[in-house]
Amino acid sequence: MSTFAARCAAWEPSASGDGDREAAVQDLLRAVRAGGLQRLRIGWCDTHGVMRGKTLMPHVLRDALDNGVGLVGTMLLKDTSDRTAWPVFDATVKDQLPGFEFAGNLMLLPDPASFHTLPWAPHTGALRAQAWYGAGRPVPFDTRRVLQRALRTLGEAGYGLRCGLEVEFHVYRITDPRLDPMGAAWPHEPPAVQMLHPGYHLLSEEWGDQAEEALHIVQATAQGLGLPLRSLEIELGPSQFEAVFDAMDALAAADAMVLFRNGVRQALRRAGYHASFVCRPPFPNIMSSGWHLHHSVVEQGTGRNAFVRDEPAPGSTALDAEHTLSTTGARWLAGLLAHAPALAALCAPTVNAYGRFRPNALAPQSVLWGRDNRGALLRVVGGAGDGATRIENRLGEPSANPYLTMAAHVHAGLDGLRKGLIPPPATEAPYGGQGQALPKTLAEALAALNASPALRAGLGDDVVDWFIRLKSSEVARHEAAADKAEWDRREYFGRL
Image (tube, rainbow, N blue to C red):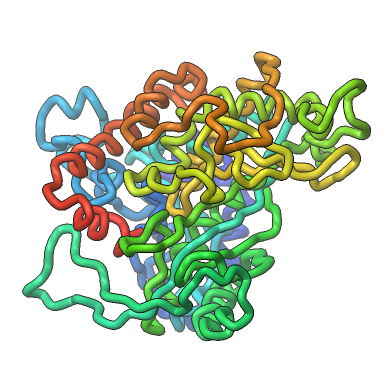
């Protein structure tokens, strides 16, 4: 009788069943025995970029690798408060979302090649998993799979995607965890905290030294997970920091983003700190956190950066895209601009994020690009002959699901390539009222996504409709809240 893993391989051959996977399984089992591990966490990234999972004992690992681990299907139907956004016990759900009715089981299939130990949790290993229906058919709403499909489409066009991560976040010392059961609520009140540095002293060595213990934990966690951490920096806002990573292939970069956020929050919590990747913590005089996605398209086979041009285009000026970017890069840039309002829903997917888009705050307000311009939505970095030439998208918030964010970039950029779109001249006044305004609310961004033929065609109508339904639940609850500040604090600060 075939295993569940083998049935999955019938749909996606890379998922299992072949000799390479069995070799990885044997390597994993030996590593677990040799390391004396006592538990294995099977982790899966949910819609909101949060790691969920189950902890298994070593003696059931082989069975989990062959036959999967049960996952209640409503995990893919929950908004940011963990409320299920579909009436799963209503008979109509069977027609709307076949396979999710009655809160039945999906299956998680662990990837043996993803094994790592957790530097903050003794005797504990971890594996990444993806969601499948019980028959071994892939669940389209598994967000890692959404990016895998996008990258296959990009590969069919002859390209791959490289991404570098710049992630801003806040870290505070916990003064009261607020775990009194008499105060339990849904969602729970986040911990009371104090700052690690007073802020408004960008890249301050002194502020960095004040936060040295927390920064050491962040460094040890990232490097212990094998992530290519490049630097840790003091950001402008109170108790705000930034982590910068080397460029990676897109799927590895998305995996790294999930691992970094999950690991840093857990490791710091054990030491009495609260790390938050929410865009705007619920305090006065904070600075918003952004996630700046540096990326370039590379040619398959050669690995050459397809955004690089040898010389500026004849007759061009520094305000023309093809002065800096190749024709491929310029068209990709134009695709991102054309679909920026719809991209906002996936790059900035919380109600909280839209307070960031304000003038002179190093955050975009309008659909504009600029040459090394940190006020523009898209910042083009590099120049003719520079192999590191790239586009930085400054739209994202650091709590966004990286798989959905990168998949949306692929489909928007590819649309620019296919249609031969031409970008407008670069801006030199990003806050001067030029260009189309970015959405001012998550509801506006969702409406733009709903109306985007290119992203619907790329991501799939089923994925777009599912995502909009989840996020519309979030928007509706925020609009209904009597105290919106309290709602924001409970919904995001303690959980993202």
